[in-house]
Image (cartoon, rainbow, N blue to C red; front, top):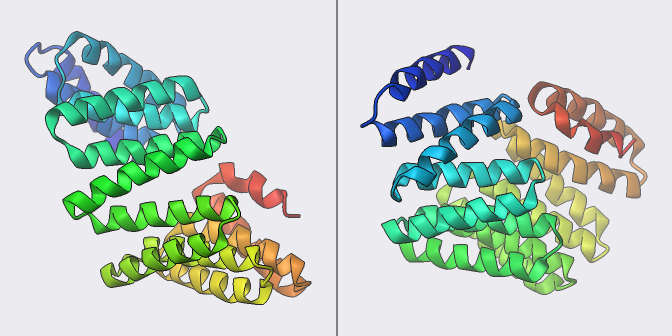
Length: 271
């Protein structure tokens, strides 16, 4: 990671001295910013993207401009700068629409839905996910379909529409299994576990969550391990399964420490 960062930094210095390499410069900024984000260096990534924004504002619409705006919108959401997140994602979606990049539009819609979710705007969240689902279906992106179906299922459960949630999660799981996409399988299986919990069936919720956790571990999906593990801890506590709670808590603490220390607060809230 560090070596890649050094090389991208050198590339940007070279491209900054050329006037006719705008698209390559924007794409290098996107790649370098993504790397910085993965390393948790969000402020550095944001500074880089804002520098690129000056180029975007001065140039005509392009794929590089859409990518940079989309990444900046996602990053602003991670940093809870909600208004600017929405603005940049909408701008990215507009450019993708002009360029006919439907997949880019759908991805921006997914990110926009997550912003609406964080703000508690459920109807806007559903509309954005449904728009993304329609696009993914149109272009035959079945992984994108599975992602949207799972998220729509989660939203339905939170609205108290458990049967709708279960139906959406089952559709997502069927697609994910056909694709052998373990990350999407984990998402859907966790959704079904939470649906069972919403119905008051803690034993079923535990079985489904344990299956999801096992799959995420075999796939090396640490995000899935964290999300599923934290839900499972809640189920263990409700079922008074203290030994299982303690064992999982210890294992999960190690996973979080090694992969996403910022998530430690979620675990500590369970103690």
